[in-house]
Each structure stands twice: as structure tokens, then as C-alpha cells.
Amino acid sequence: MNHSHSTEFGEILALFEDYIDGGYRRTRPERTAPAAGSGSSQPATADSRRPSAVSTVSTAAVSPAVSAPPAAPAAELSSEQRAAELRALEERVRSCALCALHQGRTNAVPGVGVLDPLVMVIGEGPGADEDAQGEPFVGAAGRYLDKWLEAINLSRTENVYITNIVKCRPPNNRDPLPAESAACTPYLARQIELVRPQAILSVGRVAGTLLLDSDLGIGKLRGRTWSYRGIPLVPTYHPSGVLRNDAWRRPVWEDLKRLRGLLDERLSRPGV
Ligand code: URA
Ligand code: SF4
Image 1 (tube, rainbow, N blue to C red):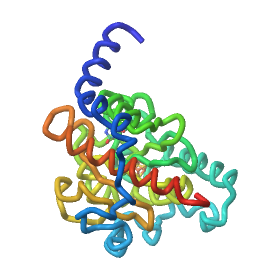
Image 2 (image 1 turned 90 degrees about the vertical axis):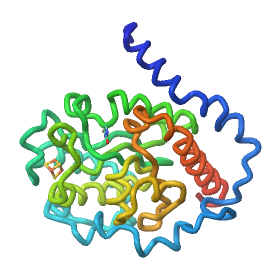
Image 3 (image 1 turned 45 degrees about the vertical axis):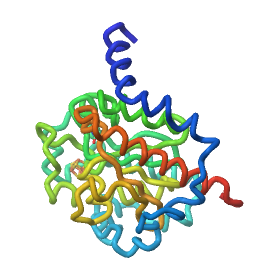
């Protein structure tokens, strides 16, 4: 790590440390939330929202992109089979030409992380750094995201899987077009089935609204726990947006605490 990188990292950390220092590690013993989405005034428990969640990213829409190999129900696959299919899916993504975004890419960015993670983070699409390296969230937003994860005792190498709605970089980081996200989301739907996260953290408007098939803005989606096919989904702002807007730091920290609370609740259940 060279000096300028350390400096930049320190600045990014400083943007969040109020909420880390005053945050999860200190408040954990006082945590009283009885269960994700319950015991509060939040209207949307996971299950009550299930019917509205996700027609956009649905296996019903699976294209030849994902159904090429025998598409066994993921529930019946061993973890070895899931790992192998995930690697095969990542390879297909790397050579995919199903939408126009393949023309401008240096590298497709399938995803990174572990099988059976506590959290799957879903962003919008690769930026310039991700396109150059073939890995998600490796630029400034990614380093900030890593601090968010660290603040709730998560890490991309141990208990997280990270990916995006579209796997190839949209030109000038514009929003993915509907045809592009429609072409790409079958990959994501299968990744979620294969990876089997305990919870999903969507970052930014594009991921939140697509996953929840909602027209609500991210400011309205965030602040509660939704459900993607029975998996609790916590939407929050995008780290690159928060880097530009300090006012979003506190709500993000609240969302992260909500996420940690629901993980702790799940982990405390017998048999999980
Ligand atoms: N922003 C995203 O949404 N995804 C990445 O992988 C990087 C930046
Ligand atoms: Fe294929 Fe998705 Fe890349 Fe489009 S964005 S070319 S669908 S991997």
C-alpha cells in the first residue's frame, strides 16, 4: 500500500468513523431489537412484502444465458455442486455478449466472495476500476463499502458475496438501460439461489428498485426490511452517493445496524 493510497483510505474512513466509533461495537451489548423488522413501527416485515418483491429478477424470466446447463433446483444441490455451478456461471459472464454492454467492457465483473455468506451485497454495475480489474467494488466506493461491512463485523473474504445488477460497465457510469438489466438479471437470480445468503444488502436506487420491483425512491425504500424470495433484503444508499452527501451517513448506519440485528436474530435461531 503506497502513501497516497493510505491517505485516501484514511479520508474515506474518516467519513464514516463517527458511526463506527459510536456504533455497532459499542452499542452491541445494548441491542434490544427483538427481531428483524418486528417490534418497531416499520410496516414492512419481510414476509408481508414478499408478494410484491421481484418480478424483475425472477427465474421465470431466465434466458438461455442461465438455463444452458441443466438447471437443477438449487435447493437440491450440494455445496460442492453449487460452488461448481457458480464458477461456471462466472465464466459465462466473463464471455457474455447478451447485451450491448459487452462491447465497451475491458472485463466483465461477475462477483466475488464466499458461498453461504451472511450477506450478499448487490450494487448497480461496474465502474472504471471494476472494469479494469474484473472485481466488484474495488474503487473508492468499494473501499468505503468495505468499511461499512467491517463496522458490522462482516468482510468480503469471510462472510460476504458481492455482485451487481449488470456485470459489464455502462458507458460513463450511466444507469443500466431496462434491456440491459433485463438481459443480465437472470445471472443475478441464479447467483442468489446458488450462493444462498442469509440476507441481502442492496446499495443504491437502481439495485433497490429492481430487486423489489418498486417505483419508490431509495429514500422511501430504505429504513425497513423487505424480502427477496424469502430472503430479508435491506436497501440503503450507494456508497458513492454517501461519499458525496454526508447527510446520508446516519441513515446508512441505521440500515447497517438493522442488517446486523436481523443477522444476529437469525444466527441465534436453533438450526441455522
Ligand atoms: N458501483 C457499483 O454499483 N458497483 C461496483 O462494483 C462498483 C461501483
Ligand atoms: Fe452479458 Fe450482463 Fe454483460 Fe450484458 S451486462 S453483456 S447481459 S454479462
